[in-house]
Length: 298
Image (cartoon, rainbow, N blue to C red; front, side):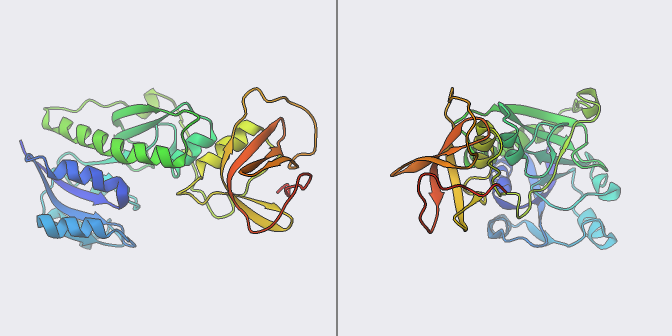
């Protein structure tokens, strides 16, 4: 049985998945619909190379677009890193409806910037979920879900690397399930009655607050490290960008001035936190500071 797919996609998340799909002789990709504001040239190159229709539309729920994609007679629509909300008509247009791959463990971690939030929340694992698209946001029935460990060696970059590979693997595995007579699913409400949502991170959210625990600071900094915006802090009226801090296990807890620089070495420095202290080991700063100087407590 061949599956005819309409692929709604953008960015590196979608490239690995495309390579797996296009190399399966039982899968046909009739079109790729990219984000209306896409900067992804790779997907257009794929379309040219494999003679696939390249679509772009600011409103995929419009009558015009629905009429256009109806002509492809797709069995299923697949969403990978697409940024428009699918509504009822287009969701139900294909035979097997519409599915999405989400780098979060549903029904928890719905929404945006999931990898950042998983690290901020000190999770020991994160999930990748393929689910049906419905009228909510990341609320459809779960088709396939897998967990991946998070260790203290991980940061935003390492979780991205895992996700780029495993999202493709899991999405491909889920699509193969539609070759069977029926696909078994799990309703999200059977896992938890509400779950929770994560909000999109915006400019200003990267400012580091020193009056919290060392563990929280460690998690915050690694959650937005390169290729993220990096944590920002201010000392001597200048901004410092912090890409990495080292968490010191079993460091003594004591009262002192929060945000004060306690010790300075060639490659980094110690800062007092709410409970103990952390070592700032990767940073950018155009200025001078010394032991005893204090970060602003934003």
